Length: 123
Image (tube, rainbow, N blue to C red; front, side, top):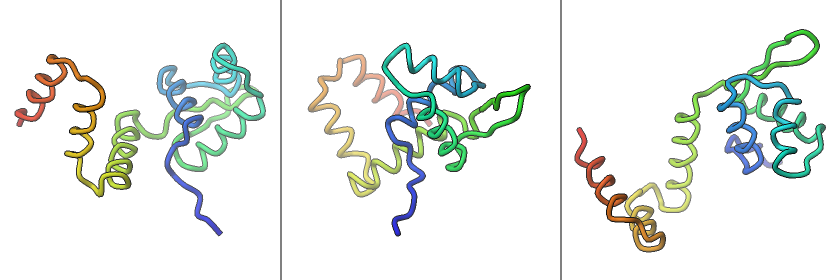
């Protein structure tokens, strides 16, 4: 049996971004936000938020008749872990090939490159 991944899927990350932005949200809040962007079923959003709770990305509390969800981890911590996982899987733990790829393939501006250099010099 395959172990369930703790990494966020594209849809889970989309939900987390909404919850991080709002700080707290019900399933209906997330559903309505997603519905404004694309067609989605309420039950799908509810299931995905339960999965995010099981993966320890969301916590929930009962408020009146609805559950209110909040992030269990800060956005920066989750994104940092996702980047580390990506670098480990794709570049064998070395960030240098990732930076080379970004510079060569994504036409970074002079300002972007100067900012990278500035950050690298930062203690």
